[in-house]
Length: 449
Image (cartoon, rainbow, N blue to C red):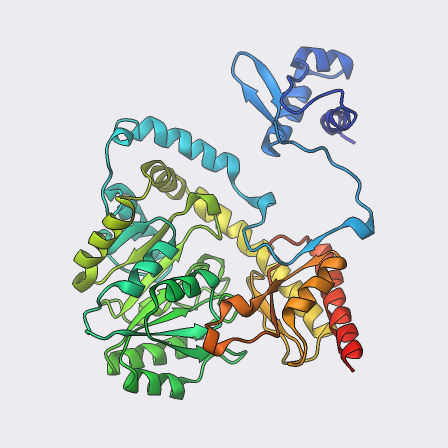
């Protein structure tokens, strides 16, 4: 073991034994150098590595301290390991905390005067300019004038539910199931809605045409890549056909491309690419790929709706926080964002592949959906069984999953579907977790019989 790793291990041990308390000051570099008979550079490297892991932090001209909330590593028995398919946020181990902290500090220096006044409702001009360039790499060609920075993409989606659209229509069409926050917007505002089922083969385009033609649809809300919760991604041909139907029947499309950054297929385009004039309203979140707590997203608004949207946003929150906007601008401009996304694609794609292999090994065909991102998938259990009960059974096995019934409108609800995400699951536990799920379903069936 390299000497610097010995030092790291010893510090962890001292915290475990109570010799060092969270929040307490660490021995000086000189003291540890003498204790371990090593160079000062070796101790510095150990401290730098611990700082990267957010175990310690440096105070200029004072020294290094243990992070207040740091919990020392403990050996876990196989029985105590929790396999968390429930949590859907990004993998905390690969989040760019220090890089983004650096960008936040820079943003404070650059925009310190602006922070004492209200910002532009639509978002900082410099950030929107940067985003316009950034979006070109994703086949979203638009101007900064059409981009609106929002406090999480959910803010934009919620506003769209109540806003008037240029086609003068009133009703909304959405996939079933879909993510819970949008379901909440629908239930709170209570518009007339029509659902269309998402299966392993996508949606029924003939039925979609019927809805567009007969049901006064103002917009169709669709998650075009890595659908939440099924993980389904539409092909370019499907997207093109949906856009053609929208053009034919004067329907707008609200495209939620919240995880398009994770798509390893560079030839798969967003729906916006098939009609950039304004028929397709593009929304994108930075929560799932960056830091969820930032609550940053964007939407590309058609000129005909811009005035109404900006007014509604102003009434909602005045403007999106300036500091996080400035930090995002620096993060993208520096190239850190692209480097981070490249790493995430590799990690999540591998997890997605392992998940698909596990599904194929342990579950019957056509009972599961899966995405290459690894973020979301669903498992449909026999109709006479209840997903909520399965959640309880699996919790006793230290496997966490989500009952997907909250992702359906009441009239379309299924109570035999669970949602899984592998974003928080270590690779070596994916197969183990799916085997436990399959075993628990079987036990429930036998008990029912």
